[in-house]
Image 1: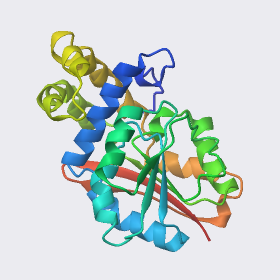
Image 2: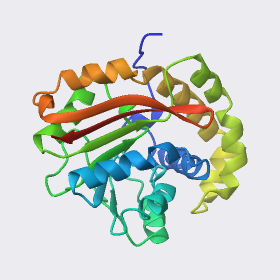
Image 3: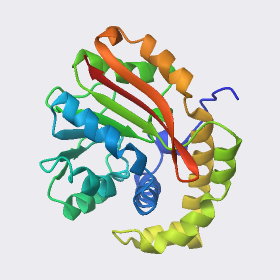
Length: 256
């Protein structure tokens, strides 16, 4: 199945922030309660130790991703860990809620482009479930920016381009209906646009299917690395690993 870079609502600058935030809140909550990223904990610990960093600079954080649960696991090995949340469309309410859960969380309230990260943000750069939002030239730009800054980078995608992922996405509206009452901070608008005017489940369904169709394969991620100038100065690990019934594709680069 060829990669298709189709239209996602969440990517559009005109898309209402309130709806985008409800969608990213859902994805954040789902990632945490399912411990979706459990298999990558040893990888992140190794990447932090190898690079000598104790800070994660998360790019495209959405509502905080799966980092709330991951944080508690990572701190067992990296007790002085600090996590900085960033996004091109920062979900401030979610960031503040996440920051309130653990003192080692911080966030940047202004837009941060993963292709042009400020030099003041130093640490292991991470992306969870966001690389597929970028076309090939922009995905290479993200990696190039990290290499130019000599920053380690770890990218994870929690789906694979294929029939099984697309079928799983078809059930996402049911999951939205079931989990919405438990998502915090509580928002009346979240209830309104989930149950009375069900825009959130519909947008999650569409963007979920498109996300699967956009996801880079392991071979395609390796091709992205080859297009990065200076990539030979890095050690790259690009592969896939099982996570429950699903799979996580990952790309980790660190300076040799």
